[in-house]
Length: 200
Image (cartoon, rainbow, N blue to C red):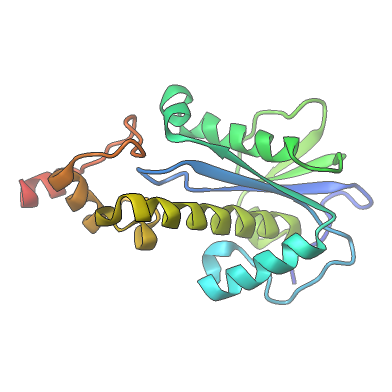
């Protein structure tokens, strides 16, 4: 069972991002404040769950969380400020959207840009430790996947309905053959040496 508190009695918002390693599409982040009584035995790091379980938990979290919000940073911004700063900015935008003001933030990972005067703790692999971070990881992942599936309708040959913008072999082959779309991150390496060697 995941932990509820890092600091007992604090109003804690868990934060996590999705899409940091993609070569196409925005980075999404979510912030979630859960009730101390919230508990679900299935809740876990979104990467460990099936799409069906993530979707079920998304509905549950959005219904039962005390407050939740999602923040987005698009490709052009990512190219301007780099993906690390874009991930922090997406978290800040998610926190801006909360209807409650937390007293402490739980951040998945080892770095964060402070958000105002609110204290924070960075927890490596925190989405497998704290319920609020796991909930944030699920919302960030499901909202981003939904967005990438909508972009797939516009650019169906890149397979974003399956790869969600991650640099799979098939995705990179499509970039090599068709060129990048406006949704590709130009500051990222869109092709690797192996792809060039085999498919040039």
